[in-house]
Structures are given as C-alpha cells and as structure tokens.
Length: 192
Length: 267
Image 1 (cartoon, rainbow over the protein chains, first blue to last red):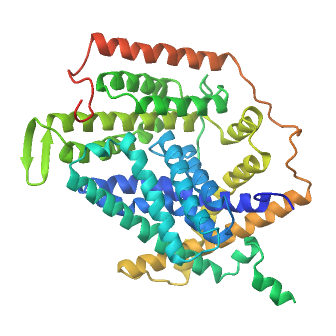
Image 2 (cartoon, rainbow over the protein chains, first blue to last red):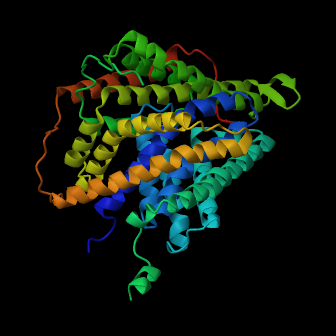
C-alpha cells in the first residue's frame, strides 16, 4: 500500500475543489454586492469559502483531504482570476489547516453535522486571524467587530456546516461516495 | 465566458510560472507590511502599468475585467471608513462614525484590495495553468500525482459547464418549476449540484483508474513534455520590481499625497 493519499483520492479531491473554486470565483461579485448593504451582512455568506474543505472531507474521509481541497479551491479561484488575487491562496491555506486540525482532533473518525460545523467555525477563526493583518479589523469599533465575528461564524455554521453536510448526505444516496471512501468495518463484516 | 480568448504573448507570459507565483506571494507579504498610503498608491500604479500595457490582452477585455475592481475598492474600504476607530470626527449619523483616521485606513484598505486584485489578474491573464503545474513539478518538485490531478481537473471544467447547461435544459423540458423562498432555493441548488458532483466524482475516479492502468507513477525521474527553465524575462521582471518598489518609497517620501504615514490606530 502506498502511504498517504492515492492518485484517486487526490484527483477526486481536486475535481471537487475546482467545482467549488468556480463557485468561489462567482461568490466574489455576489459578496461585493451584498457588502454594499453595510453592517457586515455579507459575512453571512462568507461561509461558502470554507465549504470545499468540509465537503471533500465528508466525501473522502481521509487525512489531508480537507487541506488539499481548500488549497486547491483557492488555487482554482486564483487562476480563474478571482478578485482577491494571491490573498485567496493565503486564506485557503489558513482555512484548510484549521478545518484539517478539527478533523484530526477527532482522529478522522467523525463525519456528522456537528464536526462539519466545528470545522467551519475553525476555518472562520483562521480567516478572522488573517484579517487582523489583511483588513486591520482590530481597528474597527468594537460593536462592529463583534457583529463581524458573529455573522461570519453563523455563516460558517450555516453554509459549511449544515448545508455541506446535507449536500453530502444527498450525494451518498447516489452511491458515488462508495467509490472513493476507504472500506469500513461494516464492509468487511458484509464480506465475512 | 467569452469563447474568443486570444491574446498576444508578452514578456510577462514568458516568465517562469513558479517564479512568478513565488514573487506574487512575496509581494503579498510585503504589501501587508505597508501601512503608508502614499507608498501603497505608487506601488499600485506600478502594478496597474503591468496590467494595462503588458498583459497582451485587448483593451476591451481589460476594461470589462476591471469593473469588479471598483467593487473591490468599495467592499474593502466602506466598513472601515464608516465604523473604524478614530479620534478626529468628520461626520456622525447614528452608528456611522467617520473619522479622519478611519477614512484614511479605509482608503488604504481599498487601495490594498486593488493592488492584490491587479497582481492576481496579471498572473491569471499571463499564465497558462498547464505551464504553471509543469513548472511547479520541475522547479519546486511538486509531486506529479498532484500536478497532473490539477491539470486533469482543469481540463474537466468546460465539460462540467456543458453538463450544467444540459441539466438546465433537461429541467426546463420536464417543466420543473422553481419554488420560492429559502426551501425553493435549496431545492434548486440541490437539483444542480448533486448530479454535477456525482458525475464529476465518477469521471475523476475513472480517469484515475485509467492513469494507473497506463502506469502513471510517482517516481521522480520522469520526463516532461514541456521543459520549463529560467530566461532573461525573469530578470526583466525582477528588475521592473526592483525599480518600482524603491521608487514608490522614494516618491512617497518626497512627494506625498497625504500627510498620514501610518494608517493603523494609535500610531
């Protein structure tokens, strides 16, 4: 057995990631339009930018997939000419690492909605951390900063937690996830 | 996406893609350390010159692409202008509190956003993804299984877009009516994303199996169809930056646009 991710895992992860990369790219202008409404309403849809890591992990369920997916999606957004340029890559690495850490903390054994939401929240924290340097958000008025925190985290739970989980659940019904997931204990029992 | 995407090759296209990416990342980090708007504006102009004159794309396309830049400027700057910390009040309506400091900080963020956007778009317009991944394998020793996965995935995107179009027609022909509200929106997303994702995963799986069947392997001593190295254009690019960056510092010191030299709060 080859160590780490196999070619199949990588290819599937990257395809999923690039689909989200296209969505990430289209999300940019939408985010911009919502942002003009003011008061950080746009932060509610920010969570979409964490979804690749969660969805890819929930589908493939292997270590390293979340980080690879988030970086690949960010790379996709970058090479399709995303509005934030290289910044996307840096955010992608941070968010992917954060989500990966959550999955690793549970030893890659849990695939439920709660873990998906936790990973989303972790990614949100990573993005907020980078934003302290990138967006000087520490210099916002405190009440405003708290709204930003709250809405971004709420958006992360809604989109990259709950929605991502529902999406993968629906995908499981198509049977396609069995192609790429590692064999489980039940599979071996079914054989015996 | 416009079907005709022809362009002239310029020296920016001929820079080693890995080097270009590395420099972009270094410039990003450097830009984060600039807190003086005067320097940033000069820097930004230097990058815009690359965008306007050296990408080799026609004017009309450049103009269309640059529309979102304005939006980037607004989204990056408005919340800081309206809600940022500051002492010297310019205006106050309810929650909105514009101060001199927050205004300039917002402006700075707007220019920063544009600088990143321009750098990113210059990279995207002048780099063929295939060359980028070949170069990453050769110069940065990226593992072939990652690089080829990326290249295969990029090739599949037009197929997916076509599939989406087919899905759209199929739903139309069957008279599927969209419901209103959040539930309807969710249903609509589901009816597109599930078939798209499942088909893509199946396709990716088949491709991976086929690649392995044809003895695609991870050994380091493979040969490459495209050989990418370094050239004089890399030197030209470096020289351009080595002129523009010090120049933006010097002109900012001698001919400043604003008197504020650090936009961070409390400095």
